[in-house]
Length: 294
Image (cartoon, rainbow, N blue to C red; front, side, top):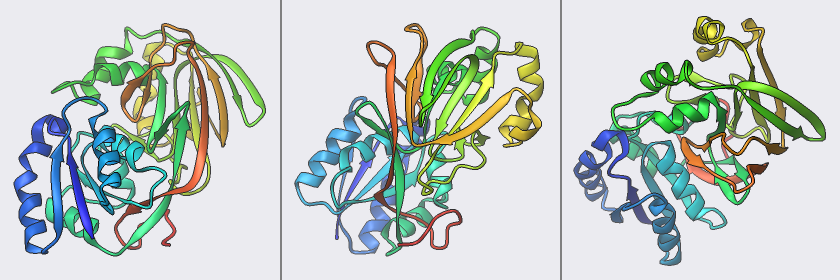
């Protein structure tokens, strides 16, 4: 099997770049035919992945965080290639969902193992996402997460400055119009590493999980934040959850939105979001819970 390794050298504040020698040594020891390339600009992972598919690579390994994985996914979708992940970002939510550890040797072993699974993806306008979409406070946090400014620091910086936004949404024919502090549309359980935004989400259940936080005072939100971050949504009265497959969303033009942790824009702030079931092959730890081995 020909293996392409795509590394985002900036991921994890440079950690991804630092572990390249370990990955090379592992692949040499396994006598694998491989090639390593680094991304050179935003969106570079998608272009490198498309080029890898065109030149016959069968296993594409993304080295980085959620954003890097998402770029590679958008490059291999529609092909027969398999996605492998070596987590080296700040959140690594998808890797965790698939049972892939941050230990480099163990992650490499899983990437080369015969175990593969088919998972769902979301599609927002023309872009696929593997983890989820964030609006309102969650998107403002994504905007501020840069360098050493981690999720928790960004949360504290953003909480008392962000404002509620008005959403107009249709979920599988159900119309919703309301102000929210934050909203997430998730394919998996967590964002930002340890913040459980959708405790019931499964990456292969054919559904997107929606979590809406009503417009409440920042103090009230802060007091209940710990419960929400642990996935105890039922204990927070101003959080509403639901599931769906097709979502039409309109938000004010000044409101940011993130897709897999990266800021995303539509000219008219109108978004068509859809779940595509069992569309991507990915390497994962054997017997990973919540997933069906194919």
